[in-house]
Length: 150
Image (cartoon, rainbow, N blue to C red; front, side, top):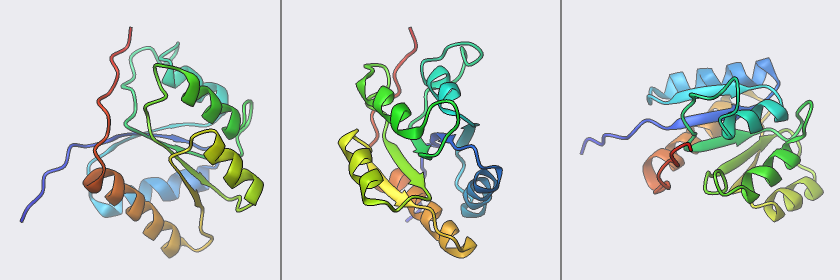
């Protein structure tokens, strides 16, 4: 049985060029067509999500992959802002970070992260987790409709 999936708009919020490169490679390897956009710090993330300059014409993401360790505004502050704003709180947020600290995990869920995944060290494990994320969110989950910008 052949399945046709709607491409996802994915926003990656991560300042590590190495991790972003691995994410993009993993998405390409899986051969599912998604539109992946990247911002490198917490301030850019909020501007992007609220479609403020220079992101006025971007499409709102269906899914956010969020690192906690970000410059300018850390991932927890970004998550808190996403989940209290009516325009963005419906967007699923996958925390994808190097931290496996219990306090980070608890705080992320307290701030309404949809799931928390620790970045693996080995490339094969990293690819496997990214494929699982993409597979889950594309094939099994019914995502909310994108909000239309004001």
